[in-house]
Image 1 (cartoon, rainbow, N blue to C red):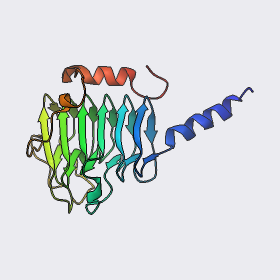
Image 2: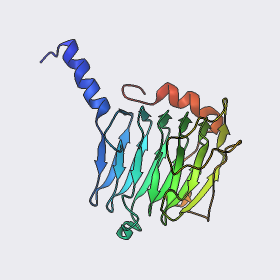
Image 3: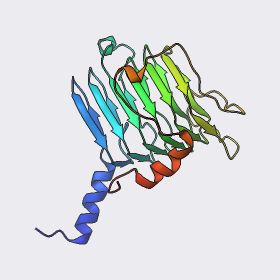
Image 4: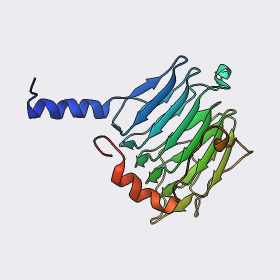
Length: 221
């Protein structure tokens, strides 16, 4: 059946705006080459003992609460689950949760963070997070150990590039302290070794913006 151009456009827009919730012991999920924007609450939420989820080559834009991994400080049953990898995603002027992690074991590598008004990655409440080979441009809180009322989790950073090209704008998030003159990734503890879980080769961080802007998002390879 042929679809009129206007209908095709509306269908594409509907797919673009839709959010994804991964919940209740869901496992083995791959979210690849999608574009997310203007969703309700979180664009992608991974919660309630779900695990083995990969988000790759996606674009997230025009949104506040982007990716939540672990829904509550009280959800201690999530310990040992929420194993998630994020790589080669573009967080384009989104504000928070890139991702925000509780209890999970999360590897965040080779993502492009651009003009994120609040923070990049947050490790909260017994989370273990490795932040590797990402490119942060005009993101004044690239990594946070703890956030809001949550206790800090472990967070390790290596091989990231953090740059600014303009003065820091005021954050609209009351949980953010005044931005530093020079942004740095907060670190805590030892987290985990992703190479013990799977084989991967990280691209050099300086190559990430061109790779991600050239290939991430719906309809691009």
